[in-house]
Each structure stands twice: as structure tokens, then as C-alpha cells.
Length: 177
Length: 177
Image (cartoon, rainbow over all chains, first blue to last red):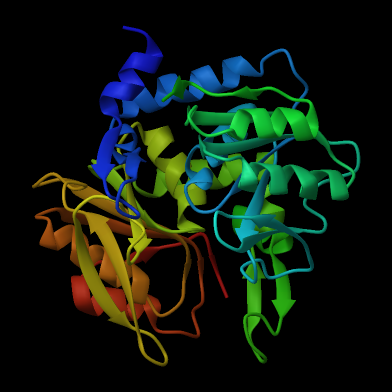
């Protein structure tokens, strides 16, 4: 069976979460399956095997789960992207639009060394707001965006298009709905 | 140099975060050092090498960073412990006391299989409130606490004593302040 099929069979659809009408893609059954998790990590690594990657940047909290393993497997630094006020040291902030209102993510000012190729990883690509804000933070700190890596893409939302339009980079993902 | 010394030299003290008078132990420089990260993971695995471990449970967000790698290295399921309302499926909740007021953590009701030996991992042990609530959730779901694993212990707070009193289990950590 293809990896994408295995992932889809493992992901749990939760209806009406976080609000009525939404079907949430729950990855916790994937985390309960060590064999599948290992295949996912290998596939994520494989997608960027021809590229220079100096660090992985992921947003809290779910982005940390595979982002941290990915950085560990590649032997590169792991950069935390957190909600406003959660990082203790001096930070650079980036605001982005939500459906209603705005949100803000932050990175430590010394998290990216100038010229580093930083791969942005999160578990799910929806509108691309968080990934785009993370990419902006990397550029503000004189880093280069190595790519966008996701496990799940919601193709009925314009996340991949938005990121390509803004940064000229195609997003990589393992399954698409 | 001893691993504990290497970790201490890498951790950054941030004064007056999250509030005046507190010196915060910032682990982000550790995450920027792949060699040190690898040694930490090996040491965490080593501490429980004689014990049966069926899964790792960690609390968001910082607990996910090393907890996820630890589960990956051991080839066991990774269980998410999250703040109230953040897990999509049916959950079991546990309230615990903070300095002022209370907090609540949750686990999916199918996260622990009956009889599983679950290791609780977080980056830092302070009063043991979150780790204790996580252990309660494991027991409510008929799991067995395999142990408590931390990178940093704040020995001027009674976390290790509290956990030993409540669960009869000694906490393991790599550095103590």
C-alpha cells in the first residue's frame, strides 16, 4: 500500500471540531503507530534529500512533533516558532491574518544564522498563514527558505497557492484532501 | 566534560521571565546544537534501558520536543497531553493546582491501552503539577507509570518529592539547579 493511503487510513476524522461544520484531521492515531511514523519521517527526509538544509523551523504545538524528529534525523538545529509571549529571550514577531482577526508568531532573534537554509515544517497546510509568517521571520533574520514541508494538505484551501505566490516555492506534503 | 556540565553551559538564563524575580532556563541553545541534542537523547534512553516502556506521554508545547524524539528512538507510541479544548476527540481531563488558581490537561480516552507502561517526559520539573496530572490521566486510563523523565530539575522546588510522595516513583533528570 502507498504511504499516502496508509496515512489516510490512520488519520481520524473528527466532526464539528473545532467548530460545527469542520471535519478535523486527527493525527494522534498516526503517533500511536511507530512503524507508520518511521515511514513518514523517512518520506519527509527523502523529499528534501537533494537540498541544503541547515535548520528546521516549526510552530507550536503540533508542528513540534514531527519537526523535532526531522531536525534530529537530519542532524540540524531545531528552531521554535511560538505564539506571542511564549519565548523567553529577545524575539522577532510576525502578525498574520486569520479568518477573523489576526494572530502573531515569534522566533528568537538568534534562532537563524545569516545565510542558513531553513526548512519550514508543520503537520497541516490550510491557508498557509502560519507557514508564511514563519517564512517571513526566517527572511527577516537573513535566512533563506529551503522549502515548505507538511504531512497533510487541505487542497480545498489555497495554502499551497498562497505560499507559492508569496515565496515562489512549491509546498511538499504526503497526503492531500 | 560531563553531559550535565555541557547542558548547563548551553542553557541560557533569561532574567525576569515570565515575571520579575524569575530566572528562566531557556533550552533553545540546546536545540541549536545537534551533537548535544543527540547526547541528551541517548542519556534519556539510557536512564530507562532496564524498564519496560510501551509509550511516552508529554505535555505541550516544550514537552513535545524531546518527548517525540524519545518515542521515535524507542519505537513506541507518542501520547499527546494538551491544554483543555486542544485535543479533537473524546478526552479525559485532569485539573491541578498552580500557584494561583488551577490548570487543566487532557488526553484522548484511547491514548493509553490498559496495562501499558507509560513514561512521562517533560523538559523541566518545577513543582511537578503537570507531570502529576499526566500520571493521573495514565492511571485513569488503566495504564502504569513507567517513570518520570526530565532534562532539568529545579531542586529548590519540591517537584521530585511531590511526585515520589504521590506515586512512589523517583524522578530522573539530567541536570539540577
